[in-house]
Image (cartoon, rainbow, N blue to C red; front, side, top):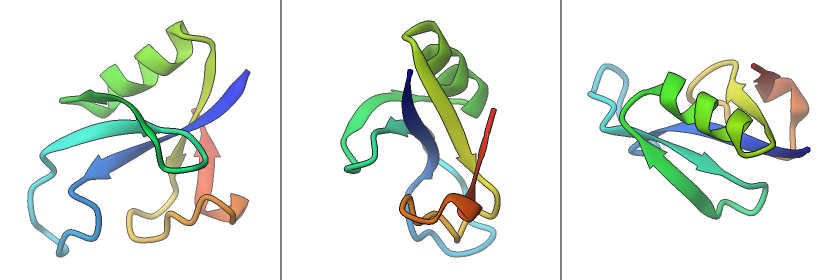
Length: 72
């Protein structure tokens, strides 16, 4: 299983602004798929043999720091 990351877009958005969509990215920030909800993104990742992770805190999303992510 490959670890992938489910992130809200737009990245770096101001606190309180709307999330437009969610993306599934690999460790190199390549977008694998885009979805309207986080659940759809997680479900897609699992169905395609990936191990999805989501950020523990939205503004802390450094993929090299495992403390910023939790598996779902």
